[in-house]
Image (cartoon, rainbow, N blue to C red; front, side, top):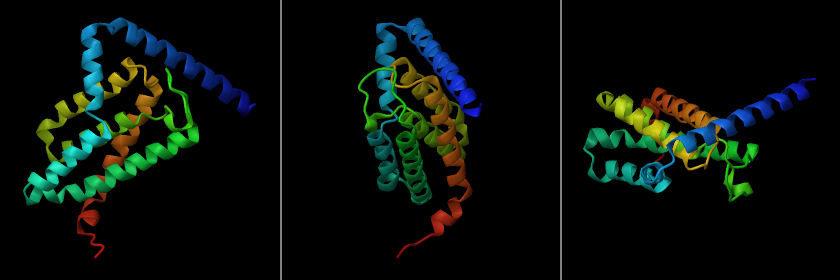
Length: 180
């Protein structure tokens, strides 16, 4: 009975995901939206975010450099958590390519964007609104580009936010930890 309930629930969630994705995509479809969302999605790529982190190391003052250690550890744990869940769930993306290494659930871009938005909002509160607008935009870009289902985005946002909050909770221990 429980299995039947889970199957019915899964089917209904997938159907709602599909409806939301295509309605969102079709309602905004334009050359401008294509350009905007394609570029916005790349702002949460691993390479881009590593560049931001390295900029803090190279160009930051001592206060800014102090926040890098928890940031680096937290975002690494965030990436590993997302990858583990992707491996376990192996959910197909809305559009090809489909492969074991290309699982849809949860959205890694969205998890990373919400991690950075939450983490930097703590350190720079006056930028909280633009940071979360950016993170939300990244999530919406993943739906618009048909790379993720809406529930992938929701899960990615929850994971990124939660991992950043955990990192901030333990930041003093992380900052003071010295391996050598």
